[in-house]
Length: 141
Image (cartoon, rainbow, N blue to C red; front, side, top):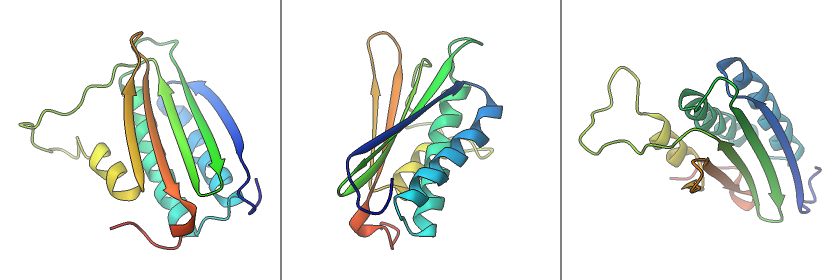
């Protein structure tokens, strides 16, 4: 992808299973490193995309479900889009975070410059996680 930040796209598709998370993290690290992100932002992306992917694996609708991770490099941002066939369920405001559960969404929001969630009528869930390239040396507040 290089450091020129041209418009490029890469995608991987894996089985929606826990064993695929390591493949996804390697993909994120490779793309983010090629985009010349600071090592701390590479780590942030790996954590956030891994969380989104782990949620997708947990909520996969069947054993044959697939998980797609798409990387989009644009002149001012790098975005990873995680798409699965599982149904997204937002956490209940009354539910307390316990046993290290329910931390994924707040973690994604804290680490990324932009996070969005969408559900298609057919049940697919998409999580979009972006970092702004002109801010890659610092972690957003």
